[in-house]
Image (cartoon, rainbow over all chains, first blue to last red; front, side, top):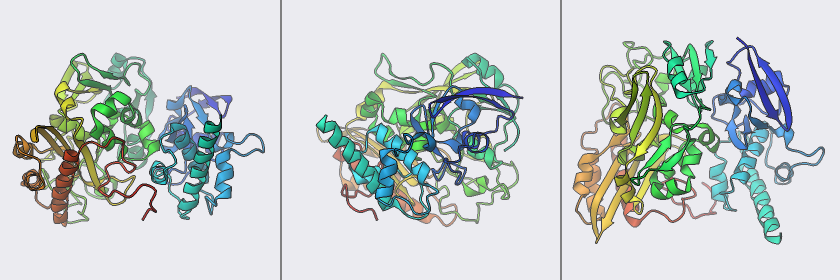
Length: 163
Length: 351
């Protein structure tokens, strides 16, 4: 049985034909579209390494069937930078040592982008940590991750106030 | 994962017809079902994708003042719905204390009711489990039982129902709206999940092919908005299932409890309404000794199903604390750590 679907993937329309409905969004990205920035950690919705935005909301791509995403707008880590210009979150993760090995980082950054867009964390470190609890970091770079996100939140707030 | 047929019906009627095939399962958020399929625990022959059926995600206030939640409302959308979160703050708190932001963006309300137990022996296909394989036995008996049930369990199954959401919903007399080939019917949530008895494989009142379309909360349940909490003790402060949890809701007037609602989570194979405890609270003046007596009544029937005596006293203390916090009043703003019995100073280092 074949399934055809259409995705807006990082701003580009992609028409995809699936030969098997078992393909998850994560496997579609990594194995069939060569977008390997999104990582497969646990593959069971427990680690957050596979986080992408679907229609603007952060989700675990390992627990979404690709077929279910027909017509959706998907943003992955590959769609974040503007050419060589890093997204402010990417720059902040570097500035604050928000990683060590880097494996969880794309998921952390996409989750942080979701957190920013949800707009409920204020600049409260406890709310940032709670809002990022779906992303595990085996290297334990949590302090740097929290600082990086707070930095971007504070800069955005200052920017809004100035405007 | 086993091979399956994938169908995406356009209407509820088409969905119910497609799900009539033996071995069919509905797919909504997929956060529990796909996990179970990856582990070989669920092996549906057909997935009926209802995730984009129109009109099933609405959150609305009914003419009589009650509320109706469409089955496809996502956990995050319900928790942050301005009217709903103000009317049922303990439900919002329960939702926000469950899973992770990513999962709450995908998981649906109907799916939450139908999520399967997190018992490790149910998940381990090499272990005997009467739920997975009726008659096989229960490897949890005599195994690692620290998270097992202390109420309503049987020799055949000592698992617990993992839902946070269902705990306040059952306290507030939620009703489940169900559609099947024979038409529509309502089932009170309190009767929706079954205790294990000698058939732990029969988990709910849903007949094969029936679909949950909505959850209704009656108008009478809106009287508790000023005094309600959901409290949950877990093995880590975020992104973990309850070891024990409680919803306490009080209607207080002139220094007396006019009405009380109490339900527990993590202690049984269904969300556990504590009516005997509610009766003790009715008409009394709220104080710590009363709350402790209510907690003792709530756990009066509890027995350990293994090495989990500690859960009984833990649950009593969670109930006592939830009642005390409810009496103190619903917080003006959602807490930074929803449902946590620990209240760190905001901004303090995390330990």
